[in-house]
Length: 152
Image 1 (tube, rainbow, N blue to C red):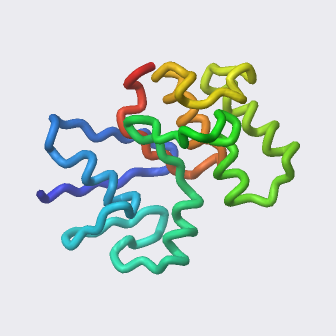
Image 2 (tube, one colour):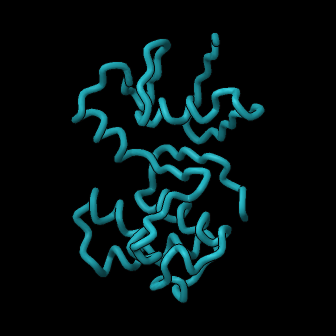
């Protein structure tokens, strides 16, 4: 109750609290995954209450998300998981996409040896790194990270 904060460009901001204090609810509401009746959220100039589908899509293209349990598609390879936002939201050709996927993998300390592996073939820490690489794929203006260091 009564929470208010502003996050500025290039700022790292963390929300800490015990289990059951509403951190996950706050995140889900900010990501427009859960409805809210009270309060206001404004993210990158978009007010979330009653946001249009068009504006919601435009906003989602501007952020990357890493959920607590990685949320990788189990039936997609590492390459496919990282390439999803690039295929969905850009007009890049397959060569450019592969280059970006490799670059993002290197950023999180992985190499191309894992590209063809499924998430189930990776350790929890490696899955988390793949999820971070996917969140970084579009060079997002904003990153939401839920328990980003767990499992690393």
